[in-house]
Length: 550
Image (cartoon, rainbow, N blue to C red; front, side):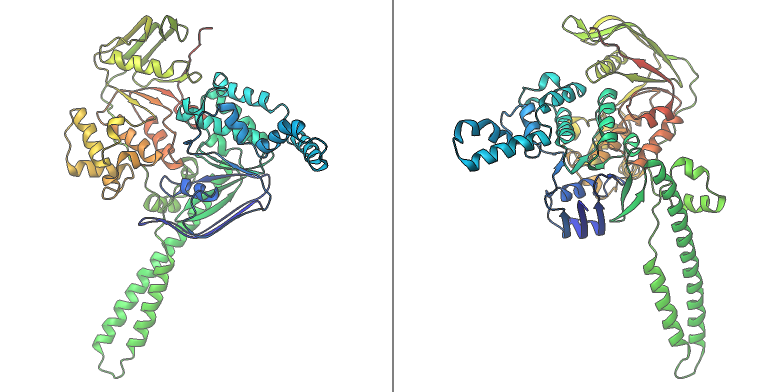
C-alpha cells in the first residue's frame, strides 16, 4: 500500500469537514477524488501532500516511495527557468546531476567518490534522464509553452504554471502522483496529451477532478460526502450505476426509518394518554413509555437526512416509488430561472469575413457564421488561437463599438440582441466585496431592482448559505462558488444570446448536469467554448474551428 489515510477529525474554524475519513492508494492504480463544492477536497489534498497537518489522525506513505504532487504556490522561486524548475521537481534528478557534473573534476582517485559517480551514472540511466530535456520540450510544445522553456517561472500566468506542474508530474515517473484539477483551462490538444499520458502511465495517480473524460480512465472513485470517504470500484460509468443503486437503498432505508418513527410516535402518544388516565401506583405505563422513548431516540440518532444525487440517465430508469423518494430527498442543485420563450426564431448575430488580430497580423482565417434563437455553436481552437479575442469583439459589437483588434470583415447585431458572457474569472471589482454586496453590485450595474429578500433567495437558489456565505468576501470563495456567482451574473437580465467560456470548470458533477439541463432548455442562442466532450455532446449544435494563419 503506497498511501493510507485515517482522519479522525478535521475542521477549519467552525466548519467541520471530516470525521472518520479513511482512504488508501495501492501501487499502479488510478484513483479520482470527487465531491460537492465545499466538502473539503482541496483541503484533503493538502493534507495528503503534507501541507496541512492540523488534524486528528494519521497519513502514512510507504517508506522509500517517490511521491510528487502539483504545487499550488510558486512564491520564492527567484529567476529559475521553466526547464530548470521542471528538472528540479524530478525525483533524484538534482542530486544525480550534481554528482555527474562535478565529480569528474573533484573525485581524483577517491574510491568512494568513484563508486558514487558510477552509481549515479547507472541510476541516471535507470530513471531515463539522459534524454529527459528533449521529452520535456515536447511536452512544453503540447501545452503551448515551448518558447517559455528558458524564461523565468515568475513570468508565466497562473494557468501556464499549472501546465508546468503537470509536465513535471508526467516526467517524474514517481511511485505516486497527486494532481488537483488537471484539465481546467486546457485546450483540446493539451487535454488529449494529458489523457494519453494518464491512460498509459503505469504508476499510481490520485486526481481531484470532475472532468468526466478523466473519470472514464480511473479504476476507482472516492466520493467525499458527509465528512467521510465512500469508495466506488471502476470508472465514471461504474460509479453512476453504483451510486444510483446505493442511493435507492439508502432512500428506502430512510423512508422505512421515518415510518418507524411515525409508528413509535403514535405508540408514545397512546401510552401517555393511558398513563394520564390511570390511578394505579406504580403507574404501569411509565416503564413502557421510557422503553418507547429510548427506542425512538435510537432510531432517530441512527438515521441521517439523506442528501442524494443520481445522474439524469439513471434517474430516468427509476421505478415510480423510488423516483418519488428521490424527488423528495435528492441533493439540492443550483436552480436556474426559466428563460423567455416569447421570442420567435430570428437572426441575432451575423459574422462575415471577420479577422481579428494584433499589430498587422490577423489571428485566424476569415470567419463566417450566424446565430438565431435556439442555435448552438461551439468554438474550437488552441489556447491563443483567438477565441477570447472573438468573444470580446462580439461583446463590443453588441454595444455598437468596434474592437481594437478588428482587421477585416463585419459583425452585425440585431437590435433585440441581449448578450451575456460567462467568463472563467470573477470581475476584479467584485473580489473585495462580500457575496451579498457582489450580487447587489451586479443588479445595480444592470439597472435591475434588488432587495435583501431577493438577493438572499438568489443565493439559496445557487446553493449559497445566505447567512454565512453572504458575508464572505468574493476573493475568499472557492472556485466552484465563484463559478456559481458567474452564472448568477450571466442570467440576471434574461439574455437571448449566451457566450460561455469553459463553464464546467470548478463545478461539481451535480451542478454540471444541472447547468447542462438548464442550457438544454434555454431558448436563446449559445456560443460556447468547452473541451468537456460530455458537455458538448449534451448541448449539441455545430462546431466552428478557428484556423490560425501560418
